[in-house]
Structures are given as C-alpha cells and as structure tokens.
Image 1 (cartoon, one colour):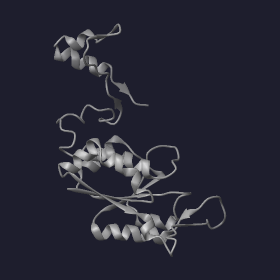
Image 2 (cartoon, helix red, strand yellow; image 1 turned 90 degrees about the horizontal axis):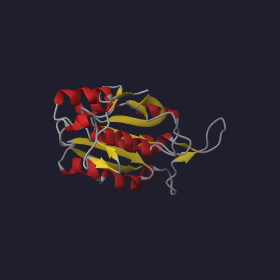
Image 3 (cartoon, one colour; image 1 turned 30 degrees about the vertical axis):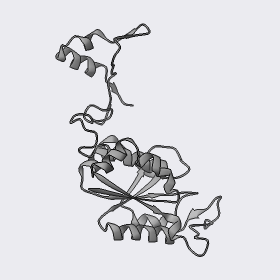
Image 4 (cartoon, rainbow, N blue to C red; image 1 turned 45 degrees about the vertical axis):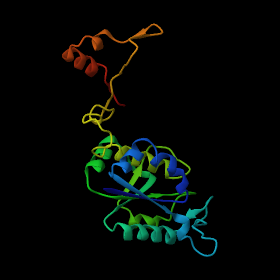
Length: 217
C-alpha cells in the first residue's frame, strides 16, 4: 500500500477530492492510504502561530521553519522513508511522464502545502522534490497537491481498472493529445459519428485515431 501524507493548514479542503471517485476507489482496494497533518497543530505558543513577517521587508507573512520542520518530522516518524514534496511555482513542471514514474515506483510521499507569501527558505533542506503545476500562482499549495496526487494515484495498478486505460490518454507518450472519441447515438442534432469508427476495420480505425491525435504545444 502506498502512503501519502499531506501537511496543510486547511485539511478540510481535501475531503471531497480524496473521498470521491478514483481516490476513494484507490483507498477501498487498499492501493493507497492518505494521512492529513494539520500544520496548525505544530504552531508556536498559545495561538499556534505558524507565520511571521519577512526579513528585509515585503508584504504578507511567511511560514516559519519551526512548525514546518516539526510537521515533516512527525510525518517521518509515521513513514521514515517517505519523500518530501514541496508544491512551489519554483519547482519542476509536473508532467504525465513523471506521474507515471511515481505511480510505478514504491516511494511514499509527504506533500507540503505552503500558504501566505510562501515559506522560509530553510524548509527546502527537508525537501526531495520541488514541484510546480504551471506558470501561475495559487493561494496555497493545496490545489496543486491535489492535482499531483490525483495524477499519480489514478495510475497505480488496479485503480483505473482497464489494462490499457492510461496508455491511450493525452500525454501518455509525452507529447500527444488523445484523439476524439464518440459514443451513442450515432447521430445527435445533425452531428454524425465519423463513418470509419463504425466500419469495424481496426486498421483504418487505428490510422484515423493516429491522424487525429494532436501534438501538444
């Protein structure tokens, strides 16, 4: 069973995602175990403070190192070999090929979701992977972590179900978008299913699908 731990100030954000659809199925069949860690539990003082002003000036607040170090160390007690993943716009761009590699590996992960203006740079000394889901900024790392987790867990053997389900998806070869697909009815509001798909000629169907796959930009 793969173990995925998530450090966040807003664990309630994950309930709908991790307990629905393929993420729910993955847990049901014993493919993955999710553990939420509330960063606030490791805050300092009576107010459980997790952030402070930025040295050198600047707007906003920064996550302090102490709570994050303590939260990661707590996660490591549960799973000492787990790799730490920091969601950050500075990270390596996430790709389908990486999702497949992670799904096929035996690694477990601890996801760190930053908030506010980010995190004290010393936190990066704990991190094995810095990951970005795109060239834009989100309010926090939670949505990015959900994206990465979903893309990995669905590829763990047995989760999707069909043996070739993931092989024909967009970006499965690193560069191609999936071809158009159709189902019943054959004609809908004047729009017809391409005749070749109804022909039963598997060679022609394969050629049509290849011709209609789009190279990703």
